[in-house]
Image (cartoon, rainbow, N blue to C red; front, side):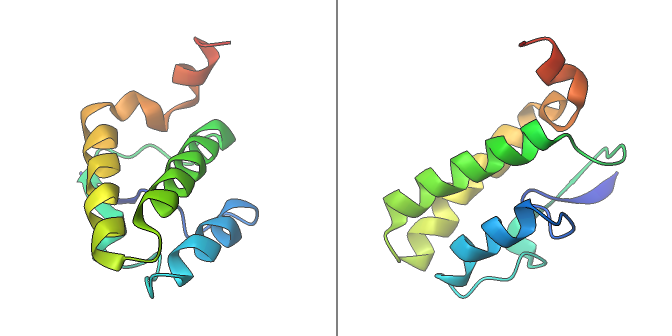
Length: 97
C-alpha cells in the first residue's frame, strides 16, 4: 500500500488546474485531505486526471467557497476511487472507448 494523491501534485498540465480550485479553499494538494492509502502502480493516464478535474469542478460548484462543504464532497470522491481502484489505470479507460 502506498499513499496516493487523488488530485496529482506532479503533472504539468493538471496540477495547475487542480490548484486553481484548491486555492479557493486554502488547500494544498499535498495535504492529507487529498491522500489515500491504496495499491499504486506508476503514473495515471490523462483520462484519470480529466475525470478528477471534472469531479473537482462539480464539487467546487456545490461548495461555492465553503471549505467544509468542499472537503465533505471530496471525501465522497476519495471513497469512489478507493472502491474502484481500476480508475487509476489506463486499461479501465481503454475498455470504455
